[in-house]
Image 1 (cartoon, rainbow, N blue to C red):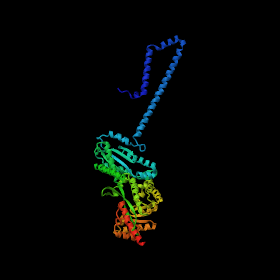
Image 2: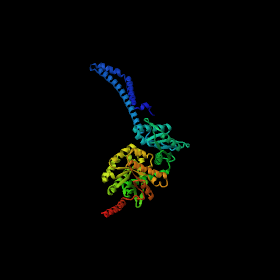
Image 3: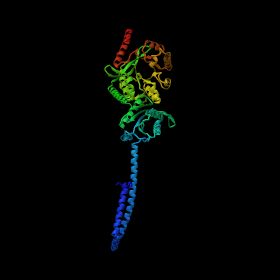
Image 4: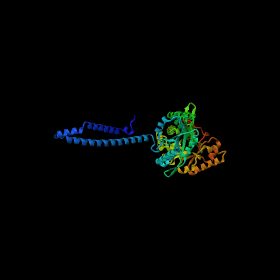
Length: 519
């Protein structure tokens, strides 16, 4: 037999026991006529003053009852407060304090309760562009945006369960019927989250990469079904901004292969298997070698060279680009320090590195370690890198130029705001993209663009380099219109450091012979 709920409370139970005990003693006292017996004893021994002591004992007993009652009441309130605190701690442990949504720990508990007889769809959502908004409006603005994202999800899917897994990643679990179009619902969520936000009086926009999986079709294990949705989200993320992808088993194979490639890339970086190759930069007026551009090559095995187009993007995504770039620059500077004086080393900077405020310090440390002069280093920056964060990029470029390092604007003409970049930043060189050089002979507009870029460079006092020169008629045209430097297969393909030294030696001998003849 189960006791009533209020009796299950320990202080109340103890008070009831005490009361029942007192009642039993009272009944016993009536039966044996206890009071009269005590009264006779007290009168018979008046001189002993037992009656006053008995009165004092009664008063103490009454006060003890009052004290006990108050103590029991206080204990009951304390227990209630403790229970509320424990409930609050449990709530905080299983909820995100910012958005008030359940968190990853709450999701893990739900896993064990999920049943296969309740079909559901799991959406894994990663916000696109949130970091840029957070940088622009500050962390408080970013918090407001995350709250609004949570509000939109709860409003659109009131019967679903939304979770914030951390950062800008959310997860939604919704029951479904055979008529539910999960892809269409995913696109509805995408449109909802992509609508403009009012963040502290500023209008901000973000996107989302969404992956979804079906439970129990994609996996009978709920935890694994969540993993499937996460895999689909990862594929959506890598496929570009604002995508919705449903899980397919082949995706896991792609993720596994990518993970294996990342591990191989990491090992290659740590073992210095990725090395700089050098392509000559030619002074078009004199035909002399002005310098070399360092280009990364992954030496994966004998006669197996992997070009940068196959691994640079992967290094950026995997967070390895800073380490890779630093190691490559160090190796290139060690090679270039032995080149003839004033021979420049051109080195490409990843767009991600221009958001690293420690980059100038890293580069200066490399120059100090290798002894390579700063004025012989030329860093090539693309327009894409500049527009990501102009303020940060401007500060970093300013530090580098103050140290004597030259800055070249690479792939000029392929961006959306080339003239804008020239007006906001100071460059020592602009490089004409190969797409204009290889196509001007058949496209008059491209020829006009090349002429315009060269005229712009001359007007601003900035030297120019044309990329992708492969034919003599291209060289003749560029020389005739005043291009300063050239680069391309016509002058030489990228070669190893050892071959570069031999190339420089061959170019030095005719000059030495000429000097001897003159003497």
